[in-house]
Length: 428
Image 1: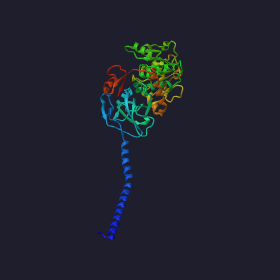
Image 2: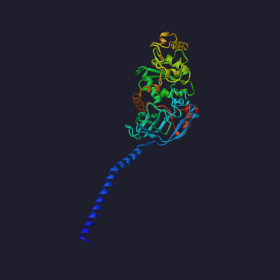
Image 3: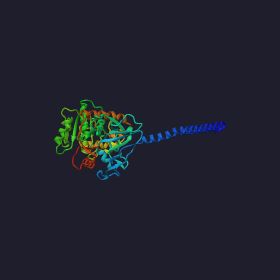
Image 4: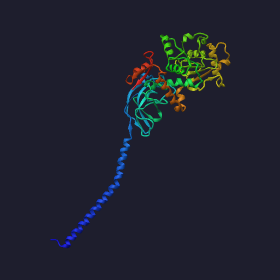
């Protein structure tokens, strides 16, 4: 038996031990409580940082490592996923055309071209696949086009900054959305930028079967403007004439039909055109000039024949803003004299004085230069206007949709290896 004193000492020791245990437990919990928020934050930050690293799917693309013949230097490859940064948008491409300028870029002869190695393509339409954390105004499923156009559209997935993409109406025909910028926008700008055309006026153009030419016919007709169109002599020209007239052309002539001194006598009830468009050069350009009224303007936007007018076609498009304008002080007197000699030699205005001849304006237009001059905000409503016309059926042109896996077949057609073909549009 323990004495009363021993029992009391035992109880006292137990109380001291329990107090120390509680103190140790509290101290340990306090230490953990101070550490846990830090650990939790670290854990949370680690998870959050990982979760915001969004990657695109792997992409299949047409690439070229050097400039040269497109059918030799292009190849289809698999590209790894790309990080989608906070201001980026990942686009699943739906369709993209093969334009002549795309071929020229690959060949290395276009004035502006991407550094190699590069992915081909310059315009197209796609669907938003994913967006960066800071992107506003776009959601997965939206349809977009690069506006202004941007290199690298011949691939299944494209990742670029939000500023590149313009949201469009998903009811737009896919093939027109893919091709609306380069050719139709060129036609629209040329109709609006050089002179004021009113309903009842007339324009004249060569290269009328090109997509730009077809767009000019339809956009002019929509505005009540007459069109006089020149096509090259070829088999089936009667069928071509009928096709262009169905689009809204008022007159269509082959080049051989215009081998007369007074081409204006061929115009029955149409006014003399004040505006002309040239995309061929050489003799075809002189035919446009023959139709123009005194004080008219001819705009050169291409040179398919690779023959000069009075100076090289590339100089008209890529170097000069105004080329020759007889109503303004001429800085290049030699060029003016060359123009006069050229017109007289070709009997364009038989019996005209130099003063009358110099009342002509020759201008150049290059869409890429126009769009590079801070025209993004101005350009996008025009794209919407053109897509509205396409949905209404008032703007149409022939295209062939080709699966992306058949790229090299589409390229051969675009290069003319298989004869005359519609514009090739890759689908993804």
